[in-house]
Amino acid sequence: MEVLESTVTQAYDLFTKKDFEAALDVLNNSDEDINNQLSTIEEDKRDEHLASIYNLKGFIYLGLGDNNSAKDSFERGLQLNPNSSQACAGLGEVFFLNNRDEEAKIMLEWALDLNSQNEFAKNSLVKVNRALALPDYHNSLEVDSMSEDELTIFNKCITDAYTLFKEKKFDYSLEKIEKAQELLLSGVMSNSTLLKISSLENFKGFNYLALENHDTAQGCFEKALNLDPRSSQACAGLGELFYLKRMDKESKTMFQFAVQHDPHNEFAVSGLKKVNEALGLETTNNTLEEKKAV
Image (cartoon, rainbow, N blue to C red; front, side, top):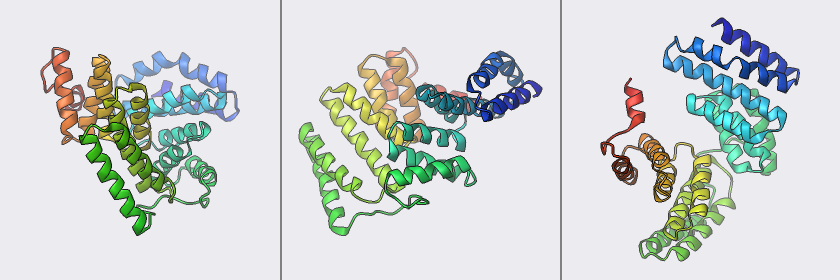
């Protein structure tokens, strides 16, 4: 692993000296050699090494002020290694820089859950908490912050919203969801609250899909996925959206992730079946499962 170690060491040294362009050049110029070297080791180990490289690239891009490239790098790092504390911390920083404080908080808390000694995540969480008017070291608790009366109103809003959705009164359903979301946002921003907001964003997304407002629906599903990267419904919603846009390959990818996150998600299972048929594949085809079996 000589090429990998020397390349990463050199790039990291340049990064600490704030010579970001040179650090990026070192990594980019060594891509082929690193990939050749990593091709000889087990897939899991290879993915971990590649994730570390993408994470380093992400922090370099942050140093360069290129937040979009940083986001892409951290997302790739997290895809390769879902247990990467640094990828979560990097995404948290990107969200914070883009004024998406709630999403930043949940990513930074996950970063610390994966590695409680991650100093970057600790420091970033402090500044996000301050932006949200929370104590410096607040780390979301798995509790509801609503009062009993508020919880009653919240539950009625959700029940009414589902009834209106079934009656195809989508605009009225959205009004109820918005009211429920306002109640959540008025309380303490805990992980439990953020996950509920994610669920509501998914619900909004399906309402907008029914209204054929595809752009707004996509925004809802993407926000839900940022708040909860393991959201099966958000993946399924994006899968359905891409299917309606006749983007069958992209649709298949999202339905597969939806099924991976929740094999009992019937909407996702049905969605994967129909997109496989559209692609001329076996209805049960799932490339993620095939990769896992190899």
